[in-house]
Image (cartoon, rainbow, N blue to C red; front, side, top):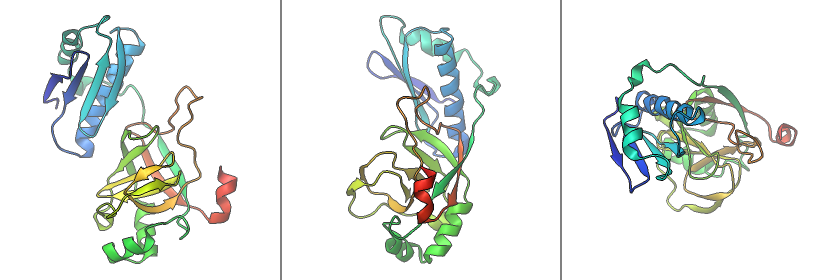
Length: 227
């Protein structure tokens, strides 16, 4: 349920679904995200510049010369969000991952923190079906949940200045993929050769909020072929 809508400056609003970080709450955010996106694409509301979903909120930015915040707010408040049909059907993705020690940068640390051997960690991770909550931080970078409680981890004590592109990380109940080399403090469990973001495509990111992801273990020798 949408809790409240507030303005941010003179050209953005936030649709707030509360403080819970869970699949049910995020599914409502994603439904509103696609609804607003559809309004913009069909030019039912002019001047919408961006609509950015998070775990439990949707930020909508607009051109103040073309539309006012009250017009957008009135449109959203006039709609029964529970009655909105699924505009976009979520996709299911099978992502290759190599758990080789060369790529599992935090192997020993994870074994110690979780009191599990690495084969057990891999089994739990590869059997988990992840839900894409949102895309952010860097282009195409997915935040995926919900991790099995056996793999819940705090971030590493000292973040890395450079996490290699393609690294798969774990933190708390979430899993992510570093779509570009970037700083970060997630526990790195492996690497994927898949390109998650291509600016040349109409839809640059292969993952979208609401999609599901499972990881498939591949050997180090297979990575070049999979690119």
